[in-house]
Image 1 (cartoon, rainbow, N blue to C red):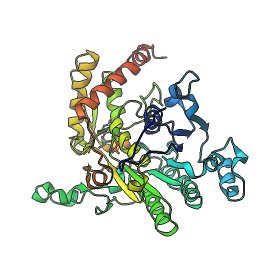
Image 2 (image 1 turned 90 degrees about the horizontal axis):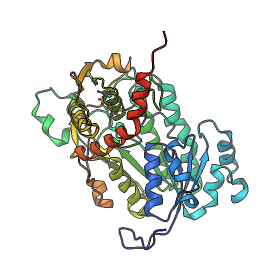
Image 3 (image 1 turned 30 degrees about the vertical axis):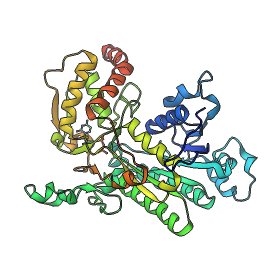
Image 4 (image 1 turned 180 degrees about the vertical axis):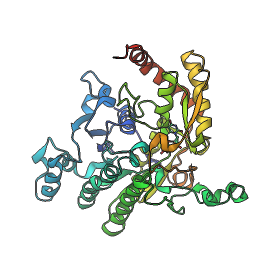
Length: 411
Ligand code: UDP
């Protein structure tokens, strides 16, 4: 167990118990790992799946006594609602097997970190094709957790998304306008930028809208009822264990986010598909850098409470086309396989995502607030983070993809 940890103001850090809803996903798995490796904190890991944290849960694991997994779907588990309702009336230790009981159990020490049901939909391919599930899982299902934290004086760290910014102001200027180069027209600031979404028929924005409303609700709970909260806006966090490879550890017709889509194409030696020419711009941050920021938030509540934080890497900006080119180069290096003759092909968003897709044009996070409050800065360049991530993808999936593609097709 780590000892002697101090916060940013030099005060000793008291061990806390963290109820992490959605602990079995990409972000949750890295956060669990970090908490167990470098802190003395305990984790109550709540999720419907645990494949990505299995290595932490094994009896032989070094940390078995500081992490407990609770298989619970906050969406449709009647135990949750019942317990939340009963909670004000029921004594703390009455329901040990259930999430609310645990939340109570750890009383004042509890720091409730919620990724709010990471089984919640968070891949763009679903926003326009499953808008109802998107809105329900990202807004409605999160409501009881927020209410519960507010009513019971639990600190809440809520994972939102940079998608709440929508499009930049610059997007609406003429293509040749010099103002497009002015950061005032594209830099995304937590306390100043507007949230600009497309029309309702562009159902892509159902996710951003649900996430914005839950942010507003949390903020209002803070203002009116004193909820201690921190909101995190991830800007394209990427790294090992992100999403799935279609047909290997996810549905073959599934469409994950761009890192996994391009990894899948590279593994299968197919051209990478550039949606609408691959002109959209993104900044990518390495998951391990981003997790450092979250750890600072956990351990510095006085500096993090009441704030919304962009967490991204403004130096790692590329167009999707440039990302495809760089991933192709990196994959050639880590796999030892030469690139295919046609490394990329263009595809329309209509064909790739279907009706109702729309896109964020550019996403550069302003870092002023996170720098001032937590002194955090990302460290890893895009090339380096792609190298370690694609090394992982190749090691984890290359054999399985080879087997899957060499199977005879049934006639
Ligand atoms: N994209 C692409 N090809 C793919 C997958 C995604 O060109 O195979 C594009 C997508 O249209 C978007 C960008 O890559 O412009 C990032 O998409 P992602 O799904 O990672 O999520 P987003 O950043 O839009 O939330």
